Length: 206
Ligand code: AMP
Image (cartoon, rainbow, N blue to C red; front, side):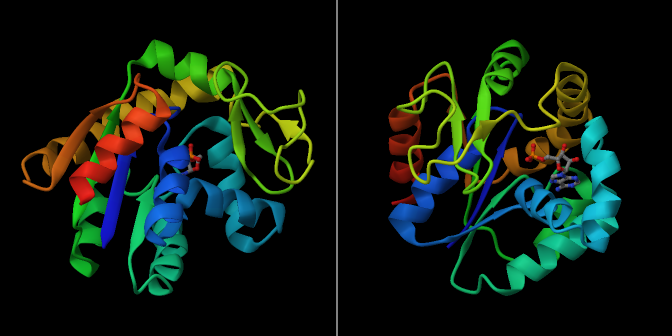
């Protein structure tokens, strides 16, 4: 089963992906996460991507294709794509190569999205994501899983967030419009609790 999760930054795509990975054993492919991993490892792709990511710009398609192709090629039994496609070119690229079984849009208004992103913290070590408003760690700034330090992502600052949201409305909404016309598209209210959202997604998958 191949699933695409769409939604504005902060709508909970990563969290829902984790729950689906646990339930269905799919491979979670997050292009943002892959770019960040490359930045950390100081690879060629990471060095190129960093300047775009820091500004909240999209990384040019050729590099997004490179990173996602490699990940998709090792997900033969099904994947959850989170953060890709983000524009029409990326959508064409994906649909030329893969059948997509379900597309979910996590719908959230800009104001709530900004509020949530500014409250987002990520473990430096294992990358688990928390939210200091509604998904707090047991001990402040410490990861429940590995004890790592929780930090704010470098691009989770107001300026870069606004740019990313602008990109979402200008580029990714065209992708949503295209998928919306298909019968395998489902829109979910992302202001609901995590468990209600995941139940809705699971009911559509089943
Ligand atoms: P995310 O973790 O999904 O918020 O992505 C963080 C950043 O990675 C984005 O602001 C972009 O700079 C870059 N990025 C992630 N996915 C893509 C993509 N599909 N195409 C281009 N850039 C991307």
